[in-house]
Amino acid sequence: MKLWLKHGDAWAGETAEHTTLRNFIKQLYSLKKVTNMWVKNASHFDLVLYLRSDLWFFNQLDVKELDEATQHPRRIYTPSFHKWEGLNDRLAFGTPDTMTIYGNRLDVAIKYAQQKALHAEHFLLDVATKAGLDVTGQSTILFERVRATGELWGMPSSIAAPTDETMIRLRPGLKVQRDQLGIPAIPKLFFTRTSNRSKQGHSYLADIAFSSWMCNKKAADFVW
Image (cartoon, rainbow, N blue to C red; front, side):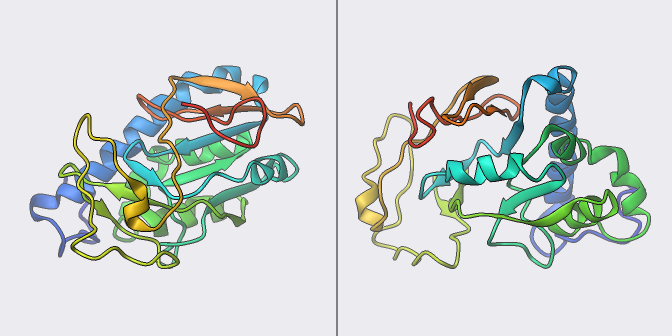
């Protein structure tokens, strides 16, 4: 880990033994492996969507944003919140060429760590900027991370945080009543390396490690 820690650990105050940094490096490795799985068939897709499998979504992904992204081949779209002076890396989409850069960040991570502490959001902004990408793309999608305990963590500031009494702890087999949080119901979707076509004829690929989600042929709502 010495090379990765030349300028310290950006998460040093949060976890012991550099756990978060280690997990971030593992994440970059996983993203590269996933990217290698689809890049040979990149010409089959107009758009690629990456998202973490531990996210809980509060609203539908606006498919118009996906169609817009196809018109801007060098623009990367990321969430509009939790940028931390960089780009929120928990979800991103863009054209295959753009998302190849996103998915292969591991290739330049160690070099970056020799210049400054590796920080997820700062690192994504640095990689995208140096690659000449347009970083102005913003998605209106809202989500939280679901911790191993089942707790929702990292509420977007645009959503009122639940009180202790309404905090929902997710458990296997438990059907969560989302109205307890005062937010609209939307299913959590899981597919396995799949693609589909929108009403406008665009083909989308969504893929991350073991799970992904996709819009259906109506390009307006979602399916289980």
